[in-house]
Structures are given as structure tokens and as C-alpha cells.
Amino acid sequence: MGISMYEASVGVFIPFLDNLSGLLDHADAYADSRNIDSAILLGMRLHPGMYNLAQQVGEANRHAVIACALLSGHVPLTVPTAEPDLAELKRRITAACEFLRGLPRGGGRRRR
Image 1: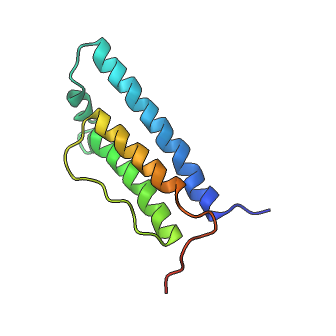
Image 2: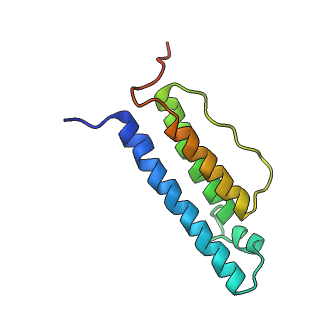
């Protein structure tokens, strides 16, 4: 028995995005416990050449949506370009997961 493209894409990205949302909860709790503005955490980088945390989360979200949309032949979800805070990043992850769950399991439309 094989694995469907839906299971190989949506089935992988949903748990990944759910875990990412949970990590943002931990970041928020950490910021609150240390009386740190969460915007400082979102602007931090692990290495000077890397995106900051907010951009890393945005890219993870974008990659999941675009990959699954292209595989299913659907138009990807659009995301606002405004600089997000932690709550907005979590809303974007929720919207991406809803979009992914709404994609057809049978492969979607075919492109020619």
C-alpha cells in the first residue's frame, strides 16, 4: 500500500505547524516570565546570516502552504505583509492549517 500525496505533504506539515505554534506559546510564556517584550524575541537570530524568529516562522508557514497548494493544484493562501507579533504569527499558522486541511485528499484539480 502506498502513501498519498496528501499524507506526504499535508500529513507532515500540519503536525509541524502545530508544534511550531506550541513553540511560540513557550516563547510567549518565557517572555512574560522574564518581563521581556516578545518583539525582542521575534527579532532575534541564531546566527547573523539567518532570518529572525518572526521571518523563520513566516517562511515555515509559507513553505507549507505553497508546497501543498502547488501539489493539489490550488491557489495558495495569501498572507498579510505587515510585521507580525506573536499572536498574529499564531493566527497565521492557524489559517495555514485550516487551508491545508481544506485541500482535497484525492489530488485536486489538474493543471495543463
